[in-house]
Length: 455
Image: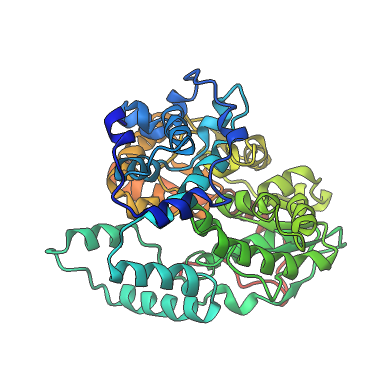
């Protein structure tokens, strides 16, 4: 950002400035001061790799945050540089100083919310999506049903609405029956019960990844887990945190803590890396909440990604002895919020290596973002597609015919990448491939979720 832009007078009112500057969620000096501006983060940043603009690097964004913390006005240019960040946290893995960049960018996005100028239709739509749709099963079911009907008709947005066409191509498919009917149920372990786990089914995933959720439950059952789908669970709040809506996210966090913490579960599991990263950071989100701070810390320690959990336990001998072969060459795409947000890289690869017949072939730059980043591919489509094109070049270089990942959002993005830049590769969650190897080894019973099939 040019110096003149950083210091120019903001057109926002002084009350708005005071409101923003007093936000408890603003980037904190202790976090900002850890950055020594060494530049080792630059090559890990997707936007810097594409634009080669200093202010669109982690180092540049932290410099701008420091300027605002020191009293510089929040400008439209500053907001734009923050918005272009995918919050992939690749810079955290590269940083030698331990800068908590994820916490900084989330705080910055919360701080700048009062400065945004949105039209009233945009405000209404945003409020409906974040405050009503995502937390509500009823609204999600209704929206999923409408999406299913629309997709079944084969209709497409008119060609004179190119933006709608573009968004349509990135939209997930509605998979019926939805997973909502499984929420509140308890699924027994196959064979001896070794663990009791809770599974958080997500929000959009109940509509667009219903089969993946069912597959996840089956795989856990096969590994001796009694699986509870807590009745009172709700959206994890990840999309809200990434969009600067931390207070709303706190309300959702409290509901999930209440839904899961009293169950004495060995682990609280998710199959979505983006959700898991936020779930594991509820202790940060609620650190100033006297009633929930301790409970949030306990909750966070119990949360595990499903690949992390499965790689940490020994599968039943009778299962491993009878695994079916999956004769494919697979490359693994690191989901950013699993690799960088949670520090989990080896677990998904270990699960894939357990599968007989499968060849795991690493792609170059496997842990560079694919461009999904929650709703980033919808609100920043051009940059998202530029990042995706680079990712697909790495995928194609691997020569693999199948792409594995550990996050539903990455799956959608990679499927779009295969259509635009790929070579016909299949895209799967690690758990789906593991389930294929389990099918011949695991007898089905009436207490299991329905078998995987296309929605």
